[in-house]
Image (cartoon, rainbow, N blue to C red; front, side, top):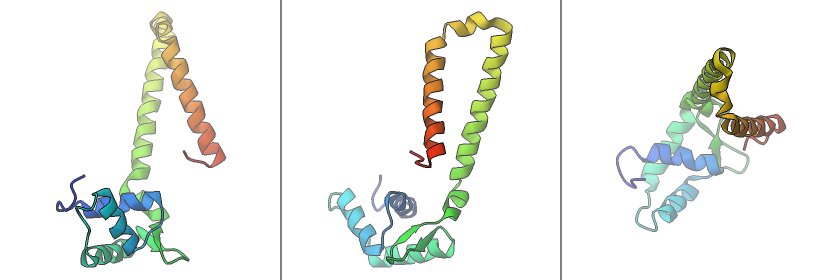
Length: 135
């Protein structure tokens, strides 16, 4: 991370909101802590950014007066598109492997351990999404 570099503040602040709701002072303190005291943004850089993100629908104040990411954030940030794109690539690769299975099953036999390991990982992901944990 390049503290103080032009354009770094917006993505860094949004990343901080992924950890927990924060107010402007929380953000300034956290960035100072992350930079080991080297960088502390001014209120004049944080609060206009928070107002802009709120106008864009990316963040909203909660009952405690702290900002948090909105459901619109995932749509506007492309996170949902990234997940959909990754799943499409996986579906395409699964189709390819299924074709290999039908044409030359012996080629996949060499990779049984890797396929089983991937299957377990996907089962774990599926279980996490089914239970609502998401992690």
